Image 1 (spheres, rainbow, N blue to C red):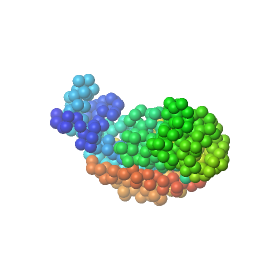
Image 2 (cartoon, rainbow, N blue to C red):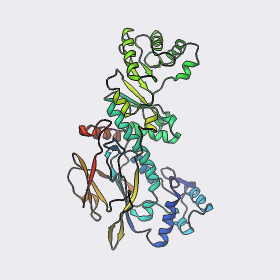
Image 3 (spheres, rainbow, N blue to C red):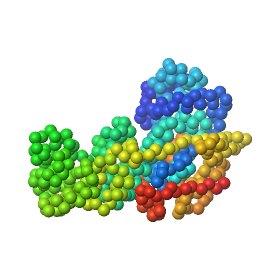
Image 4 (cartoon, one colour):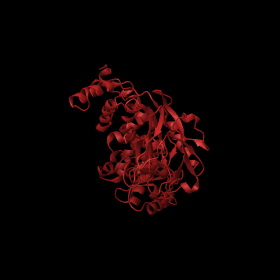
Length: 435
């Protein structure tokens, strides 16, 4: 068994090798015994169906997934744990100690849009190298794409008004960081999460919560303390007791140059109308109104006519009705046979798959998938825009997208959608397969 080095630390950072399900390693172990481990295989990552009332999803997590493949190394710590727990045989331990992904990965550009059956990721490598990546790839793409898909629609519904991500307290602490990244990629203007700001350079925002107001004898005292620290150009939370009284207190303290007020309760459309009228009467005509409170793409769309300048979104960005799962799967579609690749597919009821490696192209009203097992994906021609780009070739990273480039591409893709695909109740877009 070779030394995997560095006490278990992978070249790019913390090892991702055990961010996996046990059966992945069982398959590797069994494949080594059956002779299938070294056979060329093609896996595709895709969703069978889009959630109801969604015409598209947003690909997010690509950069994190590429790094996870780079860091997929079984170091001393990982191997020691596997050995002590009898997870795999000694022969498999030897194989895992030398594991380095040597294959090719193609994928949609991060920030692009996907529909049902679209091969968001295509992994071509020896069977054992590819199958063991299933869990970590799915965990990244399912989580990040679900968040990005929700936020892109919230941003679209907001119609140019800002959407701020503030869902950390509704998520696992590590997932909150990934969620903030996915939300920013999909168009959110900022995050409340400081670690996401530190790691990914996302703008961070935040002032005070209700606890700060309640900790003072009066609302005026709380706002005065906030004003001494942050000045007038900040956001004052005005709904702790009574919204009208809170707005008057904020203007009294900060003056008509008050930056913004936030409303977190009540009928937001009615309260925003009342707040705007009162602010204008008090001379605070430039003060912005920010609202929050379990918002999702549908409630944001319903507030389009209200005098609201921004939305703070948390719960339904991370979980709840605004955050349905992306339901992505990772399936074997071709395996080496007789010197070439043979298509394979599941036929089980409700979970059938289309066999064969597919190249994807975007047309005006659908995605076209061209099945071709033998020609390199670059040589499979089709109409429209080619959707897959090389991410890893022969184990070497081709491109690691930046968050800003993915954010810009997402904005471009959503802006190019037809009207029929926009709005909170759009019908799902389809993909069509051609052999």
